[in-house]
Length: 156
Image 1 (cartoon, rainbow, N blue to C red):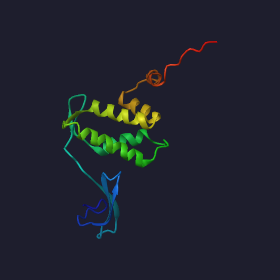
Image 2: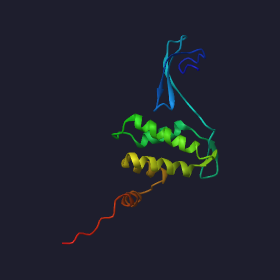
Image 3: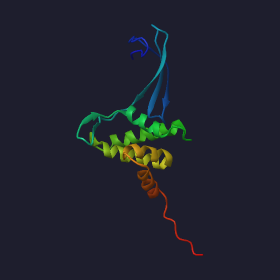
């Protein structure tokens, strides 16, 4: 594994342990050339996924990109980082087990929204605002109105 600090390819593993509910291995590494320490994660990858964008463009699926977008929507929310990691791993496993290597970005977005809705509604609305490209406050109003349960008129 190449050292991210000096580029040395001869780094040493100092510690390994299971991570993310035993679906990944966390490795602490040390670079003897510069003394740098860093962490890597090893995960099973069932197949190489390709994302089909809405404009038809194709790009390799990037777990880190998915993780960044989810973590942005979860900023300052009272959700444990481990729970977020589990959610992301669950999304990736679900995508890999679909049986297809080409997955439309719309499918990924819907799965992420479904997962966020179960964990935190604020993060769900944040993600939806970017995913659904909200342009005005009215877009938020309509979306949030759909989340609220219909209130029954009370009899006076």
